[in-house]
Length: 570
Image (cartoon, rainbow, N blue to C red; front, side):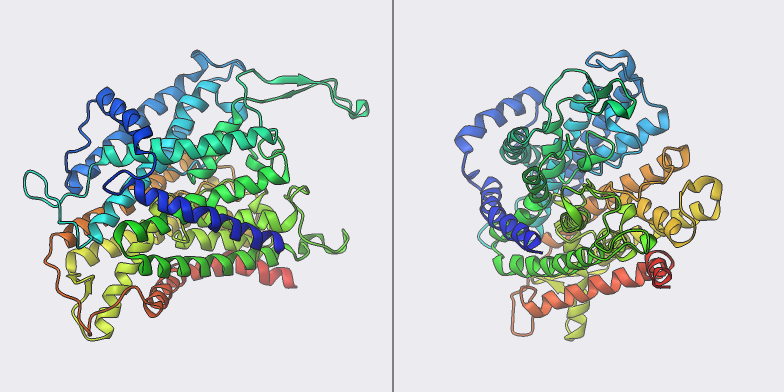
């Protein structure tokens, strides 16, 4: 438990100055480093022929975001199909089949990194570096850009007038400027430092092909072994910092080459949370609502600590399946003994609270309650969440709580003096209800047809495998209960649908809501106004979040992990 507490403290100590730095990056002056990064950005603007000063309506901002993703998706899809005949492929890896290439392209395009393949065996160096790592930089940058556009529009500072486009629409900013600043000033510098730290711990960073080595134990009966290597450190750095997930190797950070030492494990664990926490802090400074940011931070932290403690407690209990077959102790099935149960449970909780999805142990081997915690994290998907999109999702619940809270005090629904009307609440409800509709709908169809399912366990755990996979796809997480035969046309196509809808609608709908509210006249705040930056409203938002999650998913939890837990007691 000391390790868990120390990791929390160290992460927040690092996130605080980073949050203030990010707020400066998106402030009027460009913040620290503007003289260094400004010329680089202007070179990129000229290269791609974009004007970073042009104000954009939410529709144009959204079209720019979708257009960039569509173009990249088509390029990466083609690259994955053709990688066998392209260069930078020393291990002669063949191209992917169409459905796996489609799922992989959409997965990395949506900041999910859900892998239905083994990276070291099915991706060339070209596909890994030019394709996968490129998306691992661009997609979190797009999430950060969207958050900044929504934040400054939804909570317009009184000292800054509402900016308008040429046709008089409310401007939410410029997409190209926002995403370029996220890449050049935040993600690439952080990823460079993190990659160098990981290389110092022994993570490979080479373009050589797989290495052939002699086993140390001749009695093993194996004359030689091929060890896949590559530019692993660069990918691991950005996959952790950008809440991407996935991994160079199929078993992810449980492989010693990807996560060789306890120090490397600590670095990678902190990287899971660093930017998502920093963005909450940046939100407070950028909008001038630091009290509201503290309320949001406290709600997220309370959920994080509660669920992480539950996961750590669960994995400290013996595995009931091994009762009488092994010495009493924590559940070490599927865990790296170098890290033990607490560090693995902490990683599992944080990686699903931040929509990262990387693993340093197998979630499928967790005790029932320990396996339920990652599922619950993804059902909510706003406990810090992915880069940018986690806080965007929380703002949706904040809008819903403001609507209900205004009615409870007998006032017309409003947020920060602007009326919450039918259009905004419809968009909030549509976005929030999409997850249970898709996750539960596809899960019901899959379980109803055993030929589609491909699960490796009967009973409640088999249901959990299916629910987890679709939840992980919609939440743009990427982790999974392994043992599922998910490389099939059904799984690849249906997960791709969940991936796309779970990424883009929760970005575009809040963008439209922010622009709609900003266009309305702001009424002065009075004694009877709903204050959204108090602990009381924080508890209200927490209650709305928990009630929505339980009403949507408690029945399926009863059929899956809770039923498995009750069965284990007997």
